[in-house]
Image: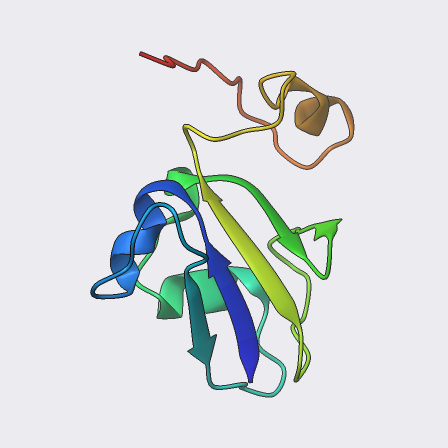
Length: 102
């Protein structure tokens, strides 16, 4: 199983979820599945994602998931304090981050 913690508007993937409670979606593990494939299986697009983590480490699209992994998904409007610009500097993304917080 993949333990998937959802934040912000991604909480809506779990019916009845509340903003003041942890929202966890338990997903079947699929051998060899990458993080990008996992996101697509959930019906999400990479453009919708903010900072995401696998076992507390920043996720890359090519990371292969393993049984028992803990994934944290944040929407694009919820990025690290620096606005995600460090991701470009470290090669995690090539796009410019223009963020409208309001």
